[in-house]
Image (cartoon, rainbow, N blue to C red; front, side):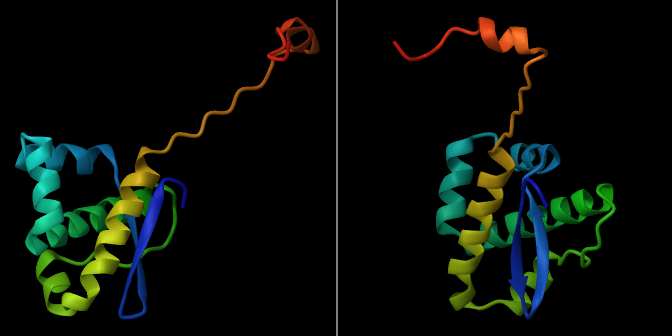
Length: 124
């Protein structure tokens, strides 16, 4: 899925999406972006909360695109199903989701051959 990442837990692959809804939920909890980033780096509870939020975003995205996806896990389920050893994978998945959600693909097509001919060359 474009603009998404995944997190696999117990053999189940969950889509993650850093959508506008996820951004708004984060802003509602953290007015200060630096405080959020500090907590994300240092607090397991923040990583679990944010992973659950990204899973909800991924499930919503999959539904909008007509794709199948598992039911997103709750914070409690993530806490009960993960260990200290999973924290690295959680951090990686969060980083990939933010990166994928922030990436923009822009395609431009010239309207005519004449437009291409009139475009100045970058080489000199």
